[in-house]
Amino acid sequence: MNASQVLLMGASGSGKTSMRSLIFSNNPASLTSRLGATIDVEQNHVRFLGDLILNLWDCGGQDAFMDSYLSIQQATIFQHVGVMIYVFEVETRNMEKDLEYYKACLAALRRYSPNAAVFLLVHKMDLARGPKAETLARKSKELKEASGDVEVTVFGTSIYDESLYNAWSRIVHILIPNASVLSRHLAKLAAACSATEVVLFERTTFLVIATSTPPPPPPVASAIASASSSVKTSKTNGDQSVGSNYEDYGSGSDTDLHKMAPTRYERTSEIIKAFKYSCARVREEFYALEMELPEFTAVLDELTRNTYVLIIVHDPTVETAALKMNIRLARPKFEELQGNSLLS
Image 1 (tube, helix red, strand yellow):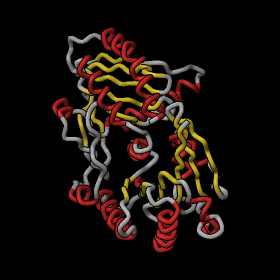
Image 2 (cartoon, rainbow, N blue to C red):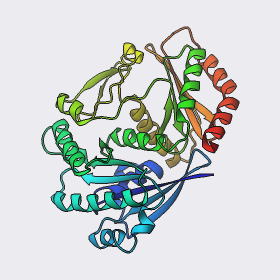
Image 3 (cartoon, rainbow, N blue to C red):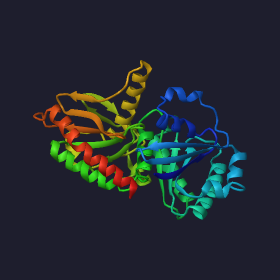
Image 4 (spheres, rainbow, N blue to C red):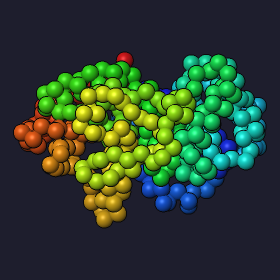
Protein backbone atom coordinates (compact mmCIF):
# COMPACT_ATOMS: atom_id res chain seq x y z
CA MET A 1 0.00 0.00 0.00
CA ASN A 2 1.51 3.36 -1.08
CA ALA A 3 1.25 6.43 1.15
CA SER A 4 2.02 10.03 0.22
CA GLN A 5 2.15 12.86 2.74
CA VAL A 6 0.55 16.11 1.58
CA LEU A 7 0.95 19.30 3.63
CA LEU A 8 -1.83 21.87 3.31
CA MET A 9 -0.57 25.14 4.78
CA GLY A 10 -1.39 28.84 4.78
CA ALA A 11 -2.68 31.64 6.95
CA SER A 12 -5.79 31.21 9.07
CA GLY A 13 -8.91 31.97 7.03
CA SER A 14 -7.24 31.47 3.66
CA GLY A 15 -9.69 28.69 2.73
CA LYS A 16 -7.66 25.50 3.27
CA THR A 17 -10.31 23.52 5.13
CA SER A 18 -13.07 24.64 2.75
CA MET A 19 -11.23 23.33 -0.30
CA ARG A 20 -10.43 20.08 1.48
CA SER A 21 -14.11 19.66 2.34
CA LEU A 22 -15.16 20.39 -1.23
CA ILE A 23 -12.71 17.99 -2.87
CA PHE A 24 -12.54 15.07 -0.45
CA SER A 25 -15.80 15.20 1.52
CA ASN A 26 -18.17 15.86 -1.38
CA ASN A 27 -19.62 18.93 0.31
CA PRO A 28 -20.95 21.75 -1.90
CA ALA A 29 -19.44 25.23 -1.72
CA SER A 30 -22.60 26.54 -0.07
CA LEU A 31 -21.89 24.52 3.09
CA THR A 32 -18.27 25.53 3.61
CA SER A 33 -19.27 28.62 5.64
CA ARG A 34 -20.26 26.28 8.47
CA LEU A 35 -16.71 24.96 8.88
CA GLY A 36 -14.69 26.16 11.85
CA ALA A 37 -11.01 27.04 12.00
CA THR A 38 -8.50 24.19 12.07
CA ILE A 39 -6.87 23.64 15.46
CA ASP A 40 -3.20 22.64 15.21
CA VAL A 41 -2.96 19.79 12.64
CA GLU A 42 -5.86 17.72 11.32
CA GLN A 43 -4.60 14.50 9.76
CA ASN A 44 -6.81 12.80 7.20
CA HIS A 45 -5.95 9.51 5.56
CA VAL A 46 -7.72 9.77 2.22
CA ARG A 47 -7.96 6.53 0.24
CA PHE A 48 -7.34 7.50 -3.35
CA LEU A 49 -7.35 4.94 -6.15
CA GLY A 50 -7.90 2.11 -3.72
CA ASP A 51 -4.36 1.35 -2.55
CA LEU A 52 -2.92 4.87 -2.73
CA ILE A 53 -3.31 6.65 0.59
CA LEU A 54 -2.98 10.43 0.80
CA ASN A 55 -1.89 11.46 4.28
CA LEU A 56 -3.39 14.95 4.14
CA TRP A 57 -2.16 17.21 6.92
CA ASP A 58 -4.35 20.30 7.20
CA CYS A 59 -2.24 22.67 9.29
CA GLY A 60 -3.96 25.44 11.23
CA GLY A 61 -2.72 28.87 10.16
CA GLN A 62 -2.91 30.82 13.41
CA ASP A 63 0.39 32.44 14.37
CA ALA A 64 0.87 30.28 17.47
CA PHE A 65 0.51 27.09 15.43
CA MET A 66 2.79 28.33 12.64
CA ASP A 67 5.48 29.23 15.17
CA SER A 68 5.18 25.75 16.65
CA TYR A 69 5.48 24.06 13.24
CA LEU A 70 8.68 25.98 12.58
CA SER A 71 10.27 25.25 15.95
CA ILE A 72 9.49 22.27 18.16
CA GLN A 73 7.36 20.41 15.54
CA GLN A 74 9.55 21.13 12.54
CA ALA A 75 10.98 17.63 12.12
CA THR A 76 7.54 16.04 12.55
CA ILE A 77 5.70 18.33 10.16
CA PHE A 78 8.19 18.57 7.30
CA GLN A 79 9.65 15.07 7.16
CA HIS A 80 8.60 12.55 4.47
CA VAL A 81 6.52 15.12 2.57
CA GLY A 82 5.64 14.41 -1.06
CA VAL A 83 3.79 17.65 -1.76
CA MET A 84 3.39 20.96 0.05
CA ILE A 85 0.37 23.07 -0.91
CA TYR A 86 0.59 26.62 0.42
CA VAL A 87 -2.55 28.74 0.20
CA PHE A 88 -2.52 32.53 -0.10
CA GLU A 89 -5.69 34.61 0.08
CA VAL A 90 -5.78 36.85 -2.97
CA GLU A 91 -6.80 39.99 -1.09
CA THR A 92 -4.93 39.40 2.17
CA ARG A 93 -3.93 42.44 4.18
CA ASN A 94 -0.96 40.62 5.73
CA MET A 95 0.98 39.55 2.66
CA GLU A 96 4.32 40.51 4.18
CA LYS A 97 3.74 38.26 7.20
CA ASP A 98 2.31 35.50 5.01
CA LEU A 99 5.47 35.54 2.89
CA GLU A 100 7.69 35.39 5.96
CA TYR A 101 5.94 32.25 7.18
CA TYR A 102 5.96 30.78 3.68
CA LYS A 103 9.72 31.30 3.29
CA ALA A 104 10.34 29.72 6.69
CA CYS A 105 8.17 26.71 5.75
CA LEU A 106 9.97 26.42 2.42
CA ALA A 107 13.34 26.39 4.17
CA ALA A 108 12.17 23.66 6.56
CA LEU A 109 10.77 21.65 3.67
CA ARG A 110 14.07 21.84 1.77
CA ARG A 111 15.86 20.63 4.87
CA TYR A 112 13.68 17.61 5.66
CA SER A 113 12.02 16.79 2.29
CA PRO A 114 14.20 18.30 -0.46
CA ASN A 115 12.42 16.42 -3.24
CA ALA A 116 8.91 17.53 -2.32
CA ALA A 117 6.87 19.32 -4.97
CA VAL A 118 5.54 22.78 -4.07
CA PHE A 119 2.20 24.17 -5.25
CA LEU A 120 1.00 27.66 -4.42
CA LEU A 121 -2.71 28.44 -4.57
CA VAL A 122 -3.82 32.05 -4.88
CA HIS A 123 -7.23 31.38 -3.41
CA LYS A 124 -10.60 33.19 -3.29
CA MET A 125 -10.05 34.61 -6.77
CA ASP A 126 -13.77 35.37 -6.89
CA LEU A 127 -13.05 38.18 -4.40
CA ALA A 128 -10.19 39.70 -6.40
CA ARG A 129 -10.47 43.43 -7.03
CA GLY A 130 -9.68 44.49 -10.57
CA PRO A 131 -8.93 42.29 -13.60
CA LYS A 132 -8.35 38.75 -12.35
CA ALA A 133 -5.76 37.79 -14.98
CA GLU A 134 -3.60 40.76 -14.05
CA THR A 135 -4.05 40.09 -10.34
CA LEU A 136 -2.97 36.46 -10.72
CA ALA A 137 -0.01 37.43 -12.88
CA ARG A 138 1.16 39.94 -10.27
CA LYS A 139 0.71 37.47 -7.41
CA SER A 140 2.47 34.70 -9.35
CA LYS A 141 5.48 36.89 -9.98
CA GLU A 142 5.64 37.91 -6.32
CA LEU A 143 5.40 34.32 -5.07
CA LYS A 144 7.98 32.98 -7.49
CA GLU A 145 10.41 35.70 -6.48
CA ALA A 146 9.83 34.81 -2.83
CA SER A 147 10.50 31.14 -3.63
CA GLY A 148 14.02 31.82 -4.85
CA ASP A 149 15.49 28.89 -6.77
CA VAL A 150 12.75 26.45 -5.65
CA GLU A 151 10.53 25.34 -8.51
CA VAL A 152 6.90 26.14 -7.72
CA THR A 153 3.61 25.90 -9.59
CA VAL A 154 1.04 28.64 -9.03
CA PHE A 155 -2.72 28.29 -9.53
CA GLY A 156 -5.53 30.79 -9.11
CA THR A 157 -8.45 29.05 -7.40
CA SER A 158 -11.96 29.54 -6.07
CA ILE A 159 -14.44 27.13 -4.52
CA TYR A 160 -17.14 28.60 -6.76
CA ASP A 161 -15.80 27.42 -10.13
CA GLU A 162 -13.81 24.62 -11.75
CA SER A 163 -10.38 26.18 -11.03
CA LEU A 164 -10.05 24.29 -7.74
CA TYR A 165 -10.56 20.94 -9.48
CA ASN A 166 -7.94 21.86 -12.06
CA ALA A 167 -5.36 22.62 -9.38
CA TRP A 168 -6.02 19.53 -7.28
CA SER A 169 -6.12 17.24 -10.33
CA ARG A 170 -2.63 18.45 -11.27
CA ILE A 171 -1.42 18.03 -7.70
CA VAL A 172 -2.76 14.51 -7.26
CA HIS A 173 -1.57 13.48 -10.72
CA ILE A 174 2.10 13.75 -9.75
CA LEU A 175 1.51 11.38 -6.81
CA ILE A 176 0.25 8.56 -9.06
CA PRO A 177 3.14 6.33 -10.18
CA ASN A 178 3.22 5.61 -13.91
CA ALA A 179 0.19 7.74 -14.71
CA SER A 180 1.62 8.08 -18.22
CA VAL A 181 1.03 4.34 -18.74
CA LEU A 182 -2.66 4.85 -18.03
CA SER A 183 -2.72 7.71 -20.54
CA ARG A 184 -1.21 5.55 -23.28
CA HIS A 185 -3.82 2.86 -22.77
CA LEU A 186 -6.59 5.46 -22.68
CA ALA A 187 -5.36 6.56 -26.10
CA LYS A 188 -5.71 2.95 -27.30
CA LEU A 189 -9.23 2.79 -25.89
CA ALA A 190 -10.05 6.05 -27.65
CA ALA A 191 -8.84 4.62 -30.96
CA ALA A 192 -10.92 1.46 -30.46
CA CYS A 193 -14.02 3.57 -29.80
CA SER A 194 -13.35 6.13 -32.58
CA ALA A 195 -13.52 8.61 -29.71
CA THR A 196 -12.41 12.21 -29.71
CA GLU A 197 -11.24 11.91 -26.13
CA VAL A 198 -11.24 9.56 -23.14
CA VAL A 199 -10.88 10.84 -19.56
CA LEU A 200 -10.23 8.81 -16.40
CA PHE A 201 -11.63 10.12 -13.08
CA GLU A 202 -11.02 8.95 -9.52
CA ARG A 203 -14.25 7.49 -8.21
CA THR A 204 -14.71 9.43 -4.96
CA THR A 205 -13.26 12.86 -5.67
CA PHE A 206 -13.83 12.85 -9.44
CA LEU A 207 -10.42 14.42 -9.89
CA VAL A 208 -8.84 13.76 -13.29
CA ILE A 209 -6.25 10.97 -13.19
CA ALA A 210 -5.32 10.70 -16.85
CA THR A 211 -6.57 11.55 -20.34
CA SER A 212 -6.07 10.17 -23.81
CA THR A 213 -4.67 13.53 -24.92
CA PRO A 214 -1.62 15.27 -23.41
CA PRO A 215 -2.60 17.46 -20.44
CA PRO A 216 -2.32 21.23 -20.91
CA PRO A 217 0.75 22.86 -19.34
CA PRO A 218 0.37 24.56 -15.95
CA PRO A 219 -0.54 28.24 -16.19
CA VAL A 220 2.48 30.52 -16.14
CA ALA A 221 2.57 34.16 -15.22
CA SER A 222 3.66 35.32 -18.67
CA ALA A 223 0.84 33.52 -20.38
CA ILE A 224 -1.71 34.80 -17.91
CA ALA A 225 -0.46 38.34 -18.15
CA SER A 226 -1.00 38.33 -21.89
CA ALA A 227 -4.49 36.86 -21.56
CA SER A 228 -7.48 39.07 -22.00
CA SER A 229 -9.09 40.24 -18.79
CA SER A 230 -12.54 39.87 -20.30
CA VAL A 231 -14.63 36.81 -19.48
CA LYS A 232 -13.99 34.10 -22.05
CA THR A 233 -16.95 32.22 -23.47
CA SER A 234 -17.11 29.03 -25.49
CA LYS A 235 -19.92 27.19 -27.22
CA THR A 236 -20.74 23.88 -25.55
CA ASN A 237 -23.77 21.84 -26.53
CA GLY A 238 -25.26 24.92 -28.11
CA ASP A 239 -25.25 26.92 -24.86
CA GLN A 240 -22.95 29.71 -23.71
CA SER A 241 -20.41 28.35 -21.23
CA VAL A 242 -18.59 30.99 -19.23
CA GLY A 243 -14.93 30.15 -18.67
CA SER A 244 -12.59 31.42 -16.02
CA ASN A 245 -11.08 34.82 -16.75
CA TYR A 246 -7.96 34.15 -14.69
CA GLU A 247 -6.84 30.73 -15.96
CA ASP A 248 -5.59 29.64 -19.35
CA TYR A 249 -5.85 25.89 -19.77
CA GLY A 250 -5.59 25.83 -23.57
CA SER A 251 -4.36 22.47 -24.88
CA GLY A 252 -3.79 23.18 -28.57
CA SER A 253 -4.63 19.56 -29.43
CA ASP A 254 -6.77 18.06 -32.18
CA THR A 255 -9.76 18.18 -29.84
CA ASP A 256 -9.88 21.93 -30.48
CA LEU A 257 -11.31 21.12 -33.92
CA HIS A 258 -14.51 20.10 -32.15
CA LYS A 259 -14.69 23.35 -30.13
CA MET A 260 -14.20 21.49 -26.85
CA ALA A 261 -13.91 23.84 -23.90
CA PRO A 262 -10.36 23.96 -22.50
CA THR A 263 -11.79 23.72 -18.95
CA ARG A 264 -13.87 20.64 -19.82
CA TYR A 265 -12.16 18.26 -17.36
CA GLU A 266 -12.62 20.45 -14.33
CA ARG A 267 -16.16 21.50 -15.30
CA THR A 268 -17.11 17.83 -15.67
CA SER A 269 -15.69 17.06 -12.21
CA GLU A 270 -17.63 19.96 -10.72
CA ILE A 271 -20.92 19.05 -12.42
CA ILE A 272 -20.77 15.33 -11.61
CA LYS A 273 -19.86 16.01 -7.97
CA ALA A 274 -22.86 18.34 -7.71
CA PHE A 275 -25.12 15.76 -9.33
CA LYS A 276 -23.85 13.01 -6.98
CA TYR A 277 -24.59 15.29 -4.02
CA SER A 278 -28.14 15.83 -5.33
CA CYS A 279 -28.59 12.06 -5.68
CA ALA A 280 -27.41 11.51 -2.11
CA ARG A 281 -29.92 14.04 -0.78
CA VAL A 282 -32.78 11.94 -2.16
CA ARG A 283 -31.09 8.69 -1.08
CA GLU A 284 -30.21 7.59 -4.59
CA GLU A 285 -26.85 6.48 -5.95
CA PHE A 286 -25.05 7.60 -9.08
CA TYR A 287 -24.03 4.75 -11.39
CA ALA A 288 -23.56 5.93 -14.96
CA LEU A 289 -24.48 8.62 -17.47
CA GLU A 290 -25.28 8.52 -21.20
CA MET A 291 -25.85 11.53 -23.45
CA GLU A 292 -26.75 11.49 -27.14
CA LEU A 293 -26.79 15.03 -28.53
CA PRO A 294 -26.62 16.39 -32.08
CA GLU A 295 -23.04 17.56 -31.54
CA PHE A 296 -21.58 14.52 -29.72
CA THR A 297 -22.21 11.37 -27.72
CA ALA A 298 -20.89 10.91 -24.17
CA VAL A 299 -20.77 7.86 -21.92
CA LEU A 300 -19.62 8.02 -18.31
CA ASP A 301 -19.34 4.62 -16.66
CA GLU A 302 -17.37 2.70 -14.05
CA LEU A 303 -14.07 1.41 -15.43
CA THR A 304 -12.47 -0.12 -12.33
CA ARG A 305 -13.41 -0.35 -8.66
CA ASN A 306 -11.82 3.06 -8.09
CA THR A 307 -12.31 4.92 -11.36
CA TYR A 308 -14.87 6.21 -13.83
CA VAL A 309 -14.19 6.72 -17.52
CA LEU A 310 -15.73 9.36 -19.78
CA ILE A 311 -15.77 8.70 -23.52
CA ILE A 312 -16.57 11.56 -25.92
CA VAL A 313 -17.44 10.68 -29.55
CA HIS A 314 -18.26 13.09 -32.36
CA ASP A 315 -18.87 10.35 -34.96
CA PRO A 316 -22.69 10.04 -35.17
CA THR A 317 -22.45 6.45 -36.44
CA VAL A 318 -20.97 5.16 -33.15
CA GLU A 319 -23.62 3.72 -30.83
CA THR A 320 -23.55 4.06 -27.03
CA ALA A 321 -23.96 0.28 -26.76
CA ALA A 322 -20.63 -0.17 -28.57
CA LEU A 323 -18.92 2.28 -26.22
CA LYS A 324 -20.29 0.47 -23.16
CA MET A 325 -19.14 -2.87 -24.57
CA ASN A 326 -15.62 -1.54 -25.09
CA ILE A 327 -15.59 -0.22 -21.52
CA ARG A 328 -16.63 -3.64 -20.25
CA LEU A 329 -13.92 -5.36 -22.30
CA ALA A 330 -11.28 -2.89 -21.11
CA ARG A 331 -12.01 -3.30 -17.39
CA PRO A 332 -9.72 -6.30 -16.69
CA LYS A 333 -6.77 -4.60 -18.39
CA PHE A 334 -7.20 -1.33 -16.51
CA GLU A 335 -7.59 -3.15 -13.19
CA GLU A 336 -4.23 -4.77 -13.94
CA LEU A 337 -2.65 -1.48 -15.03
CA GLN A 338 -3.90 0.34 -11.93
CA GLY A 339 -2.52 -2.37 -9.66
CA ASN A 340 0.85 -2.41 -11.42
CA SER A 341 1.03 1.39 -11.38
CA LEU A 342 0.47 1.64 -7.64
CA LEU A 343 2.86 -1.20 -6.84
CA SER A 344 5.72 0.09 -8.99
